[in-house]
Length: 386
Ligand SMILES: *Cc1c(COP(=O)(O)O)cnc(C)c1O
Image: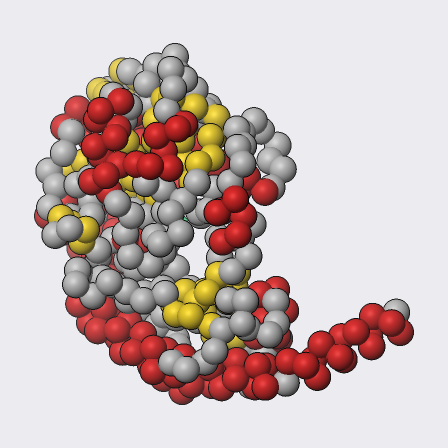
């Protein structure tokens, strides 16, 4: 159906002149990395955007998470409580931090962990809780704050998909001990690659800044085990240009979302996860639930969409506890997660997707629905012939 494929990657293109203006500044200053002028400006702007005191940038979200976990986890404890229904590499992050993921259940209504689902897992072994915001709307962040405060365990948020969101009027960025974000090209703020941590804890911010640059606290003075996870200036230039265009982007995201909303209305069996518009929201991700009344499996639906160049993809799937990792994890019975893991699909979104693309995508879904029985028959015949 498409001569170009459309994907679920945001790939937002900031104004090119702005990107060059910023780039000229670092180029002329001669400072290309290691706390250059644009990285400092970006961190200041992000701190005020998230209404927090400190922002520390990193080469990507992954290492920002690893280092935040290392700094915040309680000494001599090794379990990190986290969702299984989440970003597919999140358990790897915990393993790189030298700790053991312990998977907990999510709430069906939010697709996120909550005080209720975390509580049974808190024990004398708990090092940290990672609250992950789902990819549409936020989790009960204050509920998690309360339970973690009560139990004296530190709370970190993976807020990669909630950059723009507010929860109960509070801006995402200031919950828990710290929050982590990504500036990968597929996310809301595009820095090609990049990540950052927001916090109101000055000591934590200082320590993170030191660790990300080989742990140099002064000339030839290394305070602990560090690594190189600094953001460089050209990535900061791209991120700043993206930030400048953010309001316009949100408007375009909303327009695309409205088209999906209208087109998907009345399509039996496919339910759009709606944004909570009582709070600030980015309208970025288009997540649909494939319900029992949809005539094809989620796998087949995705496969057929993909074959037409509509690069929809299964999300929250497989859940992390359903995989066999090469490292230790703690798995409990997670019936809600199991049930949710084969239901969700991300539909194309982002800068390269226009209204007609969306209409065609939904038209193709309607086509699949109307021909479902023929498709099934055809597949059965094929199988017999094999
Ligand atoms: C993308 C993503 C990350 C990792 O960020 P990178 O910058 O790509 O390393 C972490 N958590 C979530 C929820 C993500 O979507």
